Length: 449
Image (tube, rainbow, N blue to C red; front, side):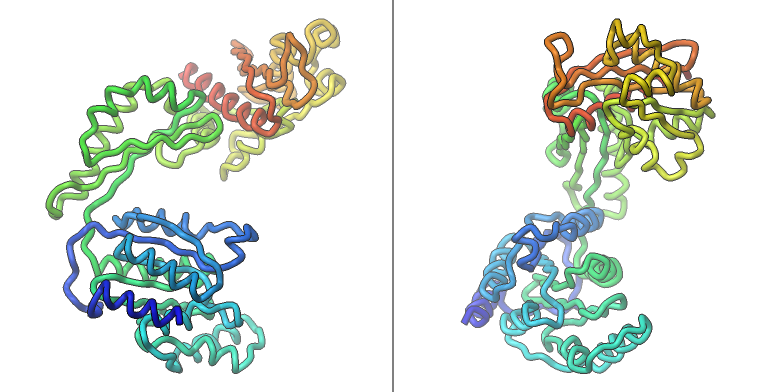
């Protein structure tokens, strides 16, 4: 049977179990994440658990070496754990711990570790109290099923759900099974798993510094910083993380020497120095650090300068306003937007001259400048942004191909105008316009300081 084979494999590879209260080892901790569930394999749900765990593990100095997903089959779970155990010291599984027949993770782990299920009265009482608190009936059979746990596992109490976490050890390796419900997994990782891992291992410090860039591709950026990248020390790596119109540049450092009390601070100082060197090479492209978004940076500038900001949007249909209002507190500087899609609305709401539209068209420098001025006056703001373009996939001409976008920023004293020609994909054109427009506003505000 699959479970028996797995037990022999693990014993041969890893020998006797190592206890939790053994002295911590000094090493670079490595982890493999494994999701269990047919619903992930068929695309019914998206695996957000692995992304969240990866971030938390990395912050704790634990390097994630791999991720995998397996279905609700005993042999698949066994094979997945066997493989994961060859790649990392820590194997963290999520999913398959519910009370239904398709939840077989617990029974598979019992067989793999040659144990048996034992009843935990404290778990039973906790789950019963949980259901009573939320005023939901629950069967005694389900309660008892969730309170039966492997005798070879350390039970990780789940105070926000019914499925307990389980911690197994063998010869210095750790195998952790957690529920797949995201908020339950996050609770157990935060309150049980990470504290135990930190006590179990002493890790080498890992640190990151990130610069956010806009409106330039990674190939151009790589050329500009080529010498910098070539001279990075072996323990510091640079990663390019591109998305539409944006590239994140992440410096990652792994402490190379003996772990001393000041190792973490020394690594942080070294990364700060490298980040400053990198910024000095591309200051025109960098708009922020870490997880900052363009709309957050623009919002901060508006708040610092005490300015009100509004938009007049045509081809983007309010997308830029949507981005701005994703930021909490944006009502401090953003009273509103005007979506003027038709010629009539551009004239009626923004005061664009009919002669301008007839002579130059809505997608033109002349029209977008009048839109910006009209938005500034109508909305009563200090700075306005106007956008007009051909998002596609139809509507283009040889003079104005699909993807042509005009944008203007104005404060009543001066107006900056730009034209961009993106691609033929409507959704991408709208997203790219949002990035380029916000970056234009950012630079406009910085020029006023």
